[in-house]
Image 1 (cartoon, rainbow, N blue to C red):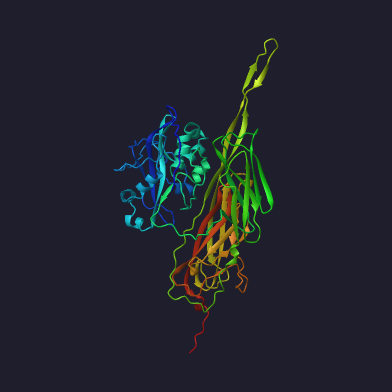
Image 2: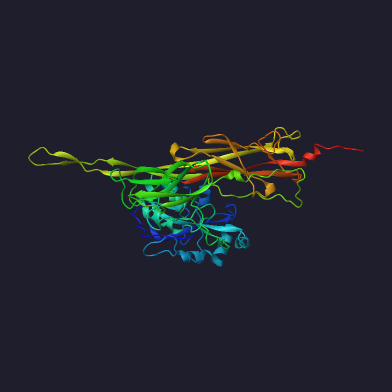
Length: 536
């Protein structure tokens, strides 16, 4: 994790923050799944009243998964004051926060034992690497004369709901120093590292997606080859995608002097004009395009006028998921010593948030008196900005059943060696214009006989749109060309045969939405028990 900051600009008599009045929300999470282990706990260096207005003990992973913001007004807030004070979390010019000191504190034996004791997590399992510690900076502020507690994520979500009122009154406290107190240097738990500026007021979308989070883990970083260079983004072949960059403006960009962005992709030029942004803020800008039908790696160049962006060159890897289907299952296949593996726990992105600035003229008419003549009216107005936030979410369902021609199947019970069929449904929900998103386009399944690795089956899309449906493709090893996957004849009796499916490529300016699904059938006996002879 890393930190940033600047001057606080603490506010007015009814909207202010006091230096040192900060804290940390702590969640111990499973290192693989990211699910909470034990309780979510707030730590603060100062005692806090139970009457503080707050949004419950909800962490950033839960908000990303769709948890709604819910203001708690009935009191009952609680936090823990450490015996040994935490270092400054939010910073100001008079009391700068030191990220290295914050790291040392939360990686210390004392802090880890304190976190384990407060959350109810097992200390030894934490140190073994099974758990990680999710940290979120908390600010305790007075807003409109009332005392609030919120994380950076909650501040951004609340600002969206309140039409920008929090940003207008506490811009540097809630939208600069709180979110920039902690952010990631490496991708982890589905959060990307922050590569933007380490000072300045940040947009709600950037705060929700990137900022105000630190993660402590208890093993070493994986070694990378010296020539390793990961692509900036990965797309599938023959797919509608969105490529986005974030623009930042040091001064007001109005219709009189708007910004523009030009994307150059595979010999084509896409230009986005008339971009308006208030000075000191940012906006995501994107282009929607279609990938080629063959795998390749391409370079996308971005040029910007009247604004800045962190990256002006992106590397996109375009892959074909249909290149590694499972092999032909044989009646003679065996797998002695096989045990059913646990389900994978892959990253998924269920929600996305972004927005667009607009600008309108506010007229201010003043009378200009010329003395002897009649004079005239002069418009001394100004440009004002309005931010329109958008969001999208993805949900899904999966049904796995014995193929219709399995003679001895009963409901979801079947014998091994026969085929299974599936129907996967993915629903993208949004009120944004169609140019802001793509519908779910890709689904693929992995299987327990291969430890959910190595081989995959790319599904066919049988219904498009925001409510997309997928099934298995016709199986090349099926005598009747059925849209099935064959269970191995050796699969253990009295077990559940679970297929794991990922739905991808619901693209938004905030990245790709994806959802992970699974369903099962029950295995009892094998196909050989249906076909045998009994000779004397």
